[in-house]
Length: 303
Image 1: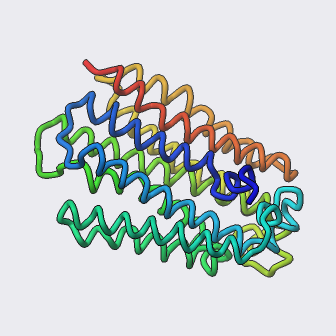
Image 2 (image 1 turned 120 degrees about the vertical axis):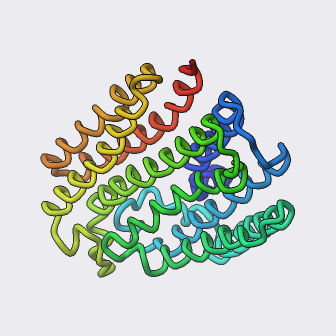
């Protein structure tokens, strides 16, 4: 097995970003605000490892199912082709997914919250149906993908934060974590539509029913620009809410997330080539990273 191809298959950069936000929340943000947490050091890493494995399994499955589309959209970047057989990748998917779900169920039982097992089982099933059916549906696939991104952050909130504690610090931590997950959901929504426009040729050849195929590229661009208004609105809400106490944080958000989002919304209306949409997709990913880093500023901006 080609090791470099394996890391590309599991989207190691995306997994690293996911690991980064979990570590940032647990060991910086929660600690800075003295949040009351439930998980031990070991339990936390079991949770993160389970999330990463289920997510990686989703990426593997997606590449198996999208093989024909990828041969058209990005023929020089077909990761599956770097492996010996598709059967080997299917085996890797089953192993990765099973271990991830098993760890999630084990953790849920150890913290005496057996119903939380359905987070991992449900995420795995949703990833399967997303890759098989939902991805080709207009907006439904985009919403599903974005929901799963948000759930990776919400899961830490559910497992680790004690929501029965009513002090201001605990409630602030819960509120900010949920706002971050909502921000991730909205940014990913925009990015998914942009990626659909970028990949329209391959999707069209396989008779998929994505937003740009049904409504055309022009309307899809306008839809993506319109969707930018939702994270912009959320950022304005956060800025207004925290402006008096966390000035540096809101200044950072304004400069490094709000203004770039406004730029993207405008550029979407004039974008024409595949290269343009790829650049905008990468910028949206960067905005996601910069938004996550606001936790650093937030933690340093305590009073």
